[in-house]
Length: 452
Ligand code: ATP
Image (cartoon, rainbow, N blue to C red; front, side, top):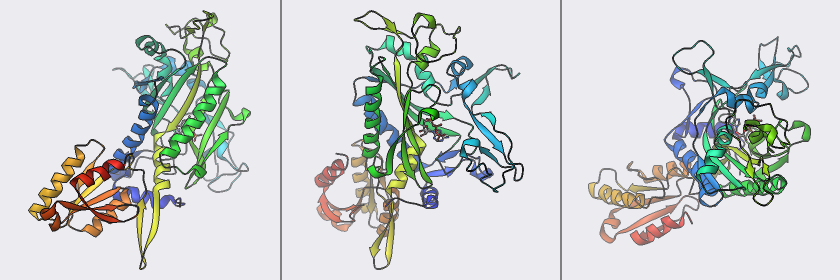
């Protein structure tokens, strides 16, 4: 069952320490969130799964961690300075401000009035002063997407690795957009993280690669625990395509507030490298690009058979980490009856994503022998390097199980007095709630098997 209630997720996230409103003690900063002890683990696990699938499991993708501060030239030639804006309307009656493309029947979504201003462009990029003098002329941007710095590093990476076309550059990192209407929890925020791959291909092979990446990305989300039926491919209509795109497929997920974009996979043609290259006229660039007199570097590559130089096409799967976290929490959240009018909340996370992989619980809180034994087991499992294992020294087994069900810990291990005598321990499974007694070897095997 998929949660249909955002409130449940928000409440669980706060109660258990996944996600907090940022600046909460001062009333909160709108559209910004902080990831708490469990949230940071979940988010890191998701990013790691992406990195592994992109970099470690392929031989044609390299990683990058480029700067967030981005110079004006980059975002001028990418088109962001001119076009990265949402047309806005103001409601003259209730003073609300909305995206023109979000209106239904040209009415104010807040009060229903049709007394609205004409749409006006609103640039979504955050500017910040660079250097000691803040006179309005020395500024850079906080990047609105991670992609542009991949394009500016294209030649560096090509020259410093043994890659040739087709190959990709992958990056995970923060992006900033001054969204007009942030909301829906972490769905639309002003500071977020993206996982982006820019995959460079020869023109003519772009359509096949686009299809390839759409399918890869759907499969990856399914492997993260998203039910196939909750994710749909939306082929964006020609008239709705971004200026750089030849074709875009949005992966639409059934969020609690409706079906919305989780990831976009675009065929960006030769627009990006064509926009940022020096000597544009030497190449036959298909996309419509702004004249570039500032770039110092040619971004073409040579076809080794025909010896012709060309600007590679780009296929871009671009996913939001925060939207991913929301989708995964939504999929995993379940309220289950446990009989006798009792129920439990359980997060059925895939073990590789669980913030805590195992909790070791001594039967009695302050019993020294039990605590020493439990700590020994915890340290042992921790040393296997598969993620965070904790000692849950609360002295209440029932409460411990409930807490770990709610945060998605796949197994709990209880150390009791029998354990001290015969070195066996109770392993309790989150999903089935089954319990079995195992010795240390059996425990380690069961623990390792979680990740196979
Ligand atoms: P939307 O139409 O929902 O505003 P977009 O089409 O502008 O999204 P892209 O520019 O394609 O988004 O960005 C790629 C991905 O980055 C999106 O699929 C989404 O997962 C994520 N993303 C974009 N904007 C935000 C945001 N404000 N908050 C959280 N994630 C975002």
